[in-house]
Amino acid sequence: MAARRNAPTPPLLFSKSPRLSPRCLSTPHCPPPVRVTTLNPGEEATVTVSFDGSNVPFAYGIPRGADGADGPPGEVTQAVLDAAIAGTAQNPSGIAPLALTISDPPTQGEVQAIMDAYNALLAALQR
Image (cartoon, rainbow, N blue to C red; front, side, top):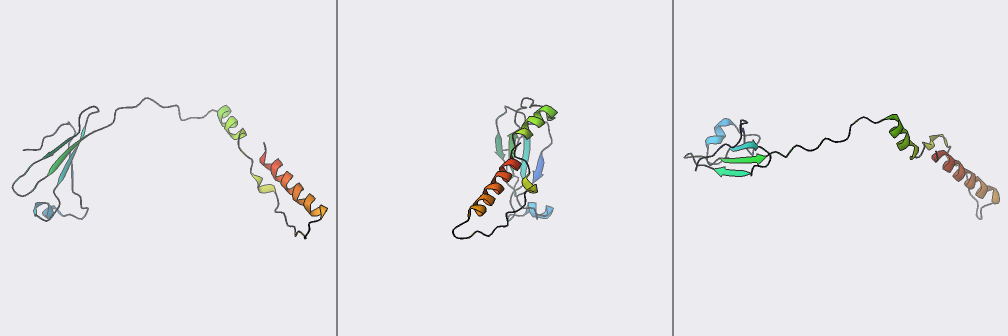
């Protein structure tokens, strides 16, 4: 059975091993050469095999996918960008770390300092 070619594009000939030399393709201990052809969308995939006396090459026909519909434009308007940013938190890097040693039990002042730091963080995160 001879391999057949199903597409007008020239096939790509490669082997499973990246270290094969051209001499290896004709020895019995090397993987067989593989021929891959890109078919048109809608065509059935094919696999054929032939024997040339020393090699058993495989030929695969793989259809490419159909063209898809156009997607949305890649550019973003300033209004869309502003709306997306408005729904995100602000960068709270301006908030200083709370350097506070809390006693046991905590004092009213310590609890108030924690509450103030929490409120400052909330205010920084909100838009």
